Image (cartoon, rainbow, N blue to C red):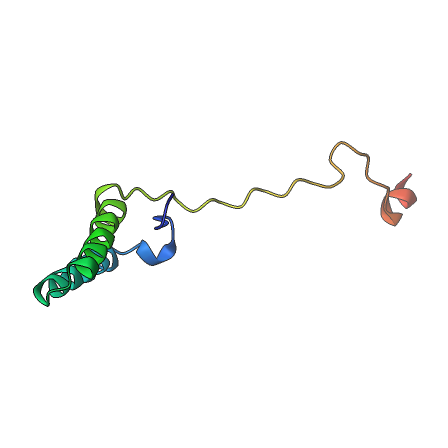
Length: 88
């Protein structure tokens, strides 16, 4: 199960990815120092997971280029225009 999509445009900049990790791990420290280990573990887990997804294993795929539109009448003969009919 993937909770963070590394291909999302919000994670393109390095400073954004680092800020997310620092905020999660910093909040874990706050929770542990105030005596609430349950929320500290949750915030720490989110920080470790975001570190893994956004820094350690970050390898986004380039945006997919739009495929060229195939001609609708590919392989079919086009009807002659008025100018072509006059030339015949």
